Amino acid sequence: MAKFILAIDQGTTSSRAIVFNEELQALGSKNVEYPQIYPKPGWVEHNPLDIWNSSVAAIRAALKAAKIKGGDIGVVGITNQRETAIIWDRATGEPIHNAIVWQCRRTAGYCRELTDSGFEEEVRSRTGLVIDPYFSGTKVRWILQRSKSVRSAAARGRLAFGTVDAWLVWRLSGGRAHMTDASNASRTMLFNIRTLDWDDVLLNKLEVPREILPEVRGSSEVVSTTSGLDCLPDGVPIAGIAGDQQAALFGQGCFGEGEAKCTFGTGAFLLLNTGARPVDSKERLLTTVAWKPASGPVVYALEGSVFVAGAAVQWLRDNLKLIKTSAGVEALARTVDSTGEVVFVPALTGIGAPYWDASARGVIAGMSRDTGPGHIARAALEGIAFQTRDLIAAMERDTGRRMKSLRVDGGASGNGLLMQFLSDILDVQVVRPAHIETTALGAASLAGLATGVWKSQKELLQSWKQGAAWKPSIKAAAREQHLAKWRLAVRRARLNAES
Image 1 (spheres, rainbow, N blue to C red):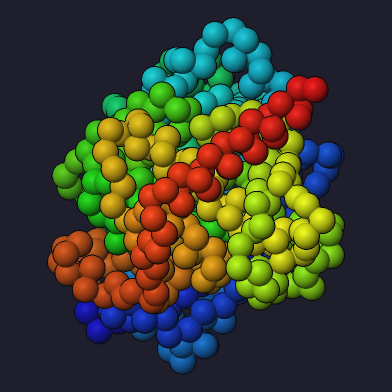
Image 2: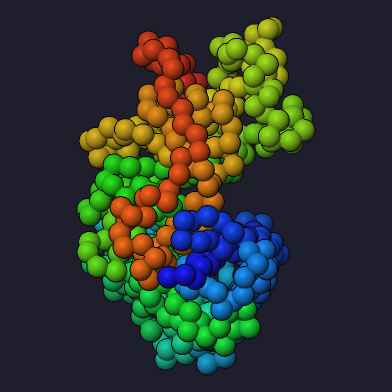
């Protein structure tokens, strides 16, 4: 195929389009921001038409930057913000409500009711998830409960629900295709990850009619073609779909069981490929579909998140005024050789797995008269690494196998000091790819595999290129001393909230 691959990376605050060639080189890209809507404290919405229009604007600009025309595109891949819920009218294509974003907490009360009723184990066994407003199911219920006419239209099949990928496929195909992939479906709290179908027990409990749900397809297969667009010709295959974190796992080339990646942004998302079997987590990690090939068994993953990663650096910048830019944290941290016994537990919004303590509060421990800004900056970076290590340790307990290496991406992966300490504390090699836009790379890779650009994952791996790597540089005794101080500081963070 002599044509190019277009990847649409639809995110929470912006839509990005990237044009790739067959060597997975990015030839042109564009990022287009769109408005955030906050109707009430804790509520977050997007206008679905803003999502669509920003995606189209990004496509046009990316084509221009790559110096090609829409007719030069051979296939389209999509990756997207997960869990965000959209419902639209099938006849008109118009949304009936703003998209309810994954960050939105409006259904927290209903989620507590579900948990208090003893339904959480039912949800976990069927979906691999915990009951939380984060996931799509309770958002869909909230929209449907707005009026009898909405519920009636849903029951008659007049309405269509989808996560952002399904909305984009609908619009790209001119309203001909209503479908999602298994990775996105697995984040709805309505999808059974074992039967790979919508679950009637969950649908009945949440009062969501099956008639509004999209067809679930593979993550790497042609699901439809473009139609009626002014930026792309009719008939371009839409062939690769995955939620952003799953796409990043694929884009990192983590095709083998036991391979893992961590994306460092405001928080940190760690996914571990567990192969063809879903691993039931005893550590309250999430069990999720990584991707579903066009043929062969589905691939599963364990997922865990660090609540505060890059946000800790933002806190140093905005609240303590220790740095002017987030990028300045590494230079400040390098002004000292160590933290000087300082340990920073950045539990600024509670602490996640394996502790799951929402009442924990941030702690900076071990300060003395000699403590300065450099020590605190270095401790903040080490705190990100310690949290990642706790998450990986939980995954190793769940799977019973040792992680051999970790691939990283996201903004903080550019911080060499953090990456070296991460390697030291994990006692494994940490690898950063040459191209860190791994979500778009994953969507492009899935689309290319589906249309014959690459014949196999093995062939695709030849296009993956390493950018930098860090190997452990400290001895086991020093590592254990670091971990002992961290464990003590975490106990203080949790006890501090109780006192």
